[in-house]
Image (cartoon, rainbow, N blue to C red; front, side, top):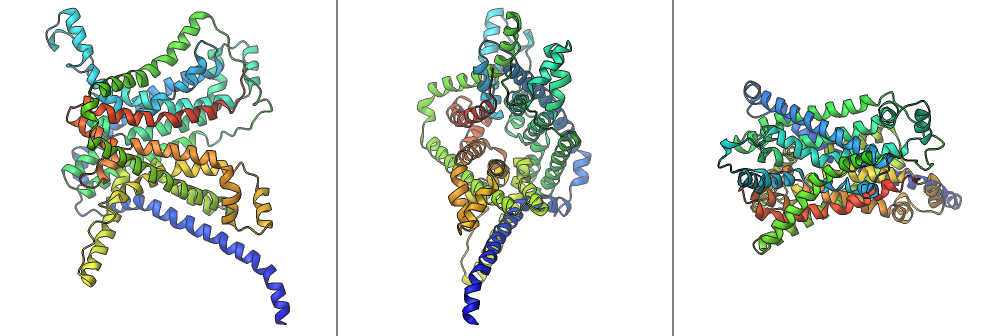
Length: 562
């Protein structure tokens, strides 16, 4: 009897072991999601149960001003990015003009420049003591500011323009991808009915591309809500600036959490509107959506207009800041290249690299767990794990510092009581807090990329591997990861660059006497030492160019051209 049981058990236990291993992936995904969602839950809890409730005071004094200014800023940036992104995406996709292939990827270059960096550059150029106004005074003989009018760069309008110049690539990127996916027959039918290229754009192309445009615009508005360096430098009182003021200057964590919750409401509204805009719009690929696109031929004056439409954002958003930073970095290289710069560069590289690897590991775990358990519950876990990307950095910092500080205090008290040893701030007072915040904020980038790539791998690959006796883990390592190598590298690069640029969360969570390139630039700019911030700012910009080129190539290769 025992021999029969022994001969049967191996065949029966194999599926049981596989099922048990598969459950481990599900449990690990659930635990990871719980940890990632902890900052959001912390912020909400602190807002409803603060130690000192100053909500009535905020409502009566500063909060209305923060709300109005934030709405104005978001509306202005949204309008700028929508116009630039749609116009340039349509031009490089559907129009033939000199330099089109160059602008296909060059339009993404401003994406590499953080908004606070471009704000510092244009302030140094356009301020009263800058070279532009100085040249005007010399040419026209003006002696003081009372002799002429010049637009004030440090204003709400100035902040709107600065942020818009570096965020329009969100709309451009997704709009261009949507235009490339559309059927050429739609354009042909529209033109045969007598519609011009412009009429075809508004009546045919734009309605179909609306879901992609809505996603790009929502990302723009969330990044606008997240901005701190620009609005702080320009003294624009938004919700993010109010959060910093309430926490850092007033020392009221509960009030900061209440402002953070207000910002989360903005995020929820944006996500809801984005999903609502495409709730009834379902698209299917046409049979000819892989046929070459035949671009419109235009007269020479219209070609010049296309060149100007594409060149102006690139010049303003990348060329002028890049050249200015390069000149300043060269002139002040001897002063800028010092032990502090080297140490802060290493800090940025270490934090960004660690966060990129961490998000990659967690992203692979979540995406592969979704592949093994494609249930509604797993879909909910994936969405919850992506909450961090929608959270502004300042809000995320509030949600991260409180639980980590609570754990540190509990551990320190425990060690004191039992061993007479103080552990200090192991998590909240170290680089761990920054890496944790980066991971939560940018996890959606890696998880989404890996999940999208895994969906393109046929399930028969899994079945073949499992039939050969490989567990889900071995299947991932031997089959899927080699096929995902390009996706993993691209996702890691994007997260790396985003971490290099992140300012609000880093400012709040950094340990004492610890700087990154982003905070280093911010400190110089706050002290009006813009020339000395050029070299570290230039390093941040150069780091962002590599993933931009990769993204542009992947989009261009998705559709053949005529």
